[in-house]
Image (cartoon, rainbow, N blue to C red; front, side, top):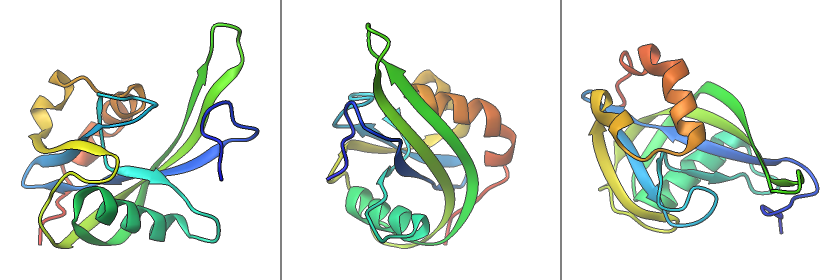
Length: 149
């Protein structure tokens, strides 16, 4: 089992960027890090699993949606230190843009709530630090994406 909390090495995670008709699918996180904050669906890569397969699996588990054709859009580090300067969390997050294939969006697994949010309103939400940074770097590109069937 991978140690998320005070890990011995960086932990690899994936994030799903799903944009449809000018809205992005966000989830309110159930667990740490970022509990109660909004971000994109995603999770950890399992041993022996490709990052592309991991992001497809995580979307299905957290949202019920079927997605395909992952396209790399971003890679970033999320390193959080405790008050003693020790690494509390260290995630390498690989974000993919995905195409919707079907299904109905329903919060499950690690998602407390799901919402399709207009891109122009996303920054009004209490976002995770890493998703806010992603949004600021990739806003222009996001506005050109469309995952819709």
